[in-house]
Length: 156
Image (cartoon, rainbow, N blue to C red; front, side, top):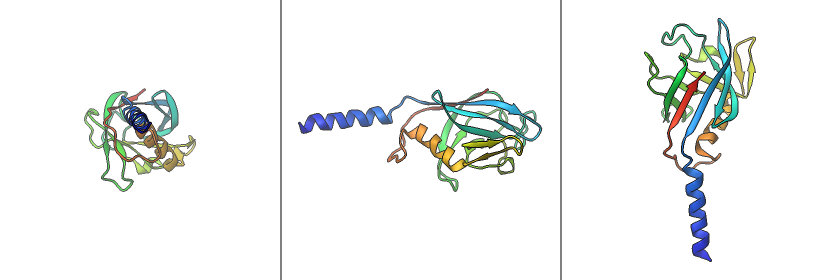
């Protein structure tokens, strides 16, 4: 019986940690002179709200990200220890999805939160939303390794 149990545990581990990919969609719902707000959808499930800067012709550090699909990579070198960085954003570098509550905390990146206030361009409970995003990637609240899976982020 031990070999069967071992095989079952290995199968479950492989299945759990080898989800093919993480597809994120930033579905923008409102754009004003001070911010752009919407929802973050992971593999078809709405996870949280998003907050970005307003559209300003894709100018570095002051504009939201142009619509399109970008690949993402994980970064572990910031204070929060984990974030998704977008690759190949036209004329931009260092564009990331990370924690924060107000547009003054970003330079062209995306913030996430479980609550949103359109009136003052903010998101709330960013750490909780961030943990939901991490769980969507890892498949668990307590990962013990990083799965090798592609990340795509589509901005609509």
